[in-house]
Length: 129
Length: 69
Image 1: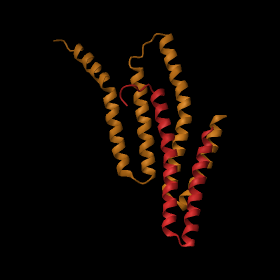
Image 2: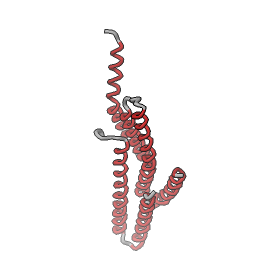
Image 3: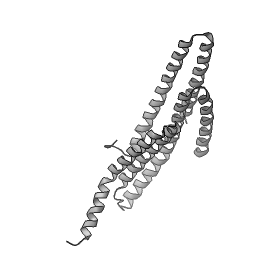
Image 4: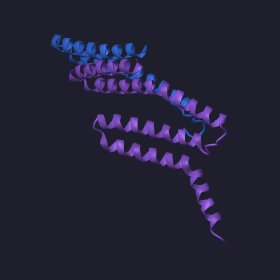
């Protein structure tokens, strides 16, 4: 059961962090960062399978989900920004966390721009000239 | 699951550095203690940053970022 495995790893890591944080704050923070990346690695494996299933479904049933890859990109950007901002907030640097979130939103907007354009074009095409 | 050793390594280094720091402080070598702490911190930083870069490359491959990031 990989889930229970990961849970126990996280609990052990939490205990280690508490011990290390007493003596040395900076290394404690680096340890939290490391635990975060460890969990992220675990999630990535699962997401990889999910994405491959999605691709097979779309290709086999040729129901062309229009912008499937942009959706995945947006999810990826959201994941990373959330990860970074939570880590920064954990190191009680809330102001920088907000900046990271703003950057993330901007990049999501940048990625999703073509979809907006197609939506606007379709809307305009409905209006009779 | 191999990466758990990385976790224990970093925690071990952190604890050893703290102990060295206090020992050296008692021995009276105050500046040496600070140097040891600094070097230990840099080692841990290198380990974590390297691990983080591995994560970002994997994210890039999983989420099919090619051009933007």
